[in-house]
Length: 122
Image 1 (cartoon, one colour):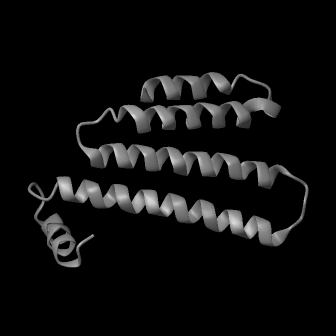
Image 2 (spheres, rainbow, N blue to C red; image 1 turned 90 degrees about the vertical axis):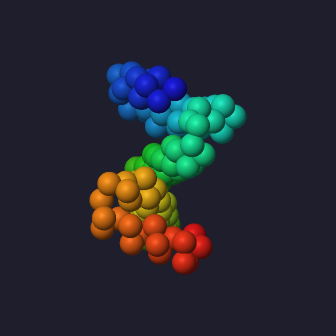
């Protein structure tokens, strides 16, 4: 599914500029819905990370519609910049946290992350 999504997004690059965002959003949204229903990974954390990545990509993609407009509403631009940064930061932090948890037995510095997650109750 990931490969199909990426191939479709590469093919969309060949489309005219006016429809790239629309087709890309449809592809990401459709694959996210399939991801939700199929849940292809055995580990639920992997399914969550994959879905979070697609949501971050979709929000980032759709925010380009706001930035492409000639409307000079600074509050709207600031809101979408904050939204894109927040969602992408959440994705990066969640991915980093899960990666550290899986590597805790191999790297001693990651054991602290495991200890903190138990005491803080993430």
